[in-house]
Length: 250
Image (cartoon, rainbow, N blue to C red; front, side):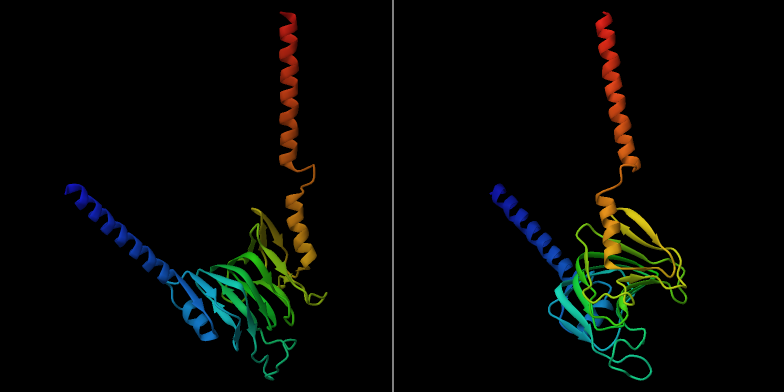
């Protein structure tokens, strides 16, 4: 009888725990299928992960002002609104329209295409982590801007995970994949725990971004880590040689 009571109590506790877990997951993850649902999810601080259920069109720039992860699930957010004071439909008319703007917060974006804007992303004094495939093709002035803007003192930072792959099929010399405006200093890109400072006014092509990644994967032989390994190897060889000499003398 006591054993049965223990089993019942164990099942009860387990059930309560599972229900609590499901409740937490329901509060922290939200799938959205429209511009209004995306904005509502961003305004709900209990939601830590927003998942796109399908491609979304937006008529306004989407501002992100709190920590959150946006999982595109290989879907697209496309800007379809107007540009500039003339109300132009061409994204080559400047209107300060970024599909997504990260403002003074820490955001992760993964597996998504951002298109149709003046630019795909603005990291405005925040930290943006990119994971998976990030497609910034089809924007009027380029892909990603690392800037400060007004009332922002923190330098913007872009972090690329080991799985990150930036895609830009519409890059041209005047439409770079990444750039830092002239009024911003201290912008950085972090790849593989290595930070690179990007100077104000700099523009990087997709090839130049990939070269930074390749430099980490294939460091020069003058790299301090390589030198340390060489010195350690030399020390071991000399130690064994000295030890052999001592044995020969004996």
